[in-house]
Length: 154
Image 1: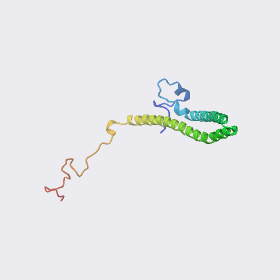
Image 2: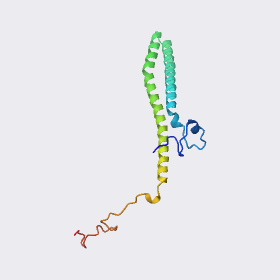
Image 3: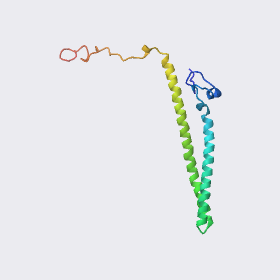
Image 4: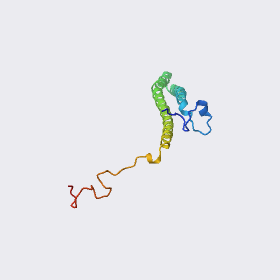
């Protein structure tokens, strides 16, 4: 049995078919999530490096102007860049990954729900198993049918 990833309606569509599906029965996100992840990683790395570089230079310039030795500002700025940048980069990558995984999970839930509805729609209403009364009881609250008047079996 073939599963239909990325569609709710039943037929599998390509990227452009899903992109221009005005009824939104076929989704594009599942097809482009890997590309979005790569683009997000590049943007996160650029953002973190530029931001931390700017903050390190700004702190270094401030400390160089406020102390007697300009080397102090450069050293503190470099240490800030080398210590904080990897931590911030790791946290940012984890954040992007978690967000994209949440999106993928939501689309998989949608696909699985649509598949469940499709499978259940093919069944007849009476095909659902119903609870049965065990054979040793007669369905009343009195207990087993073979008890005597005193409630003892035998």
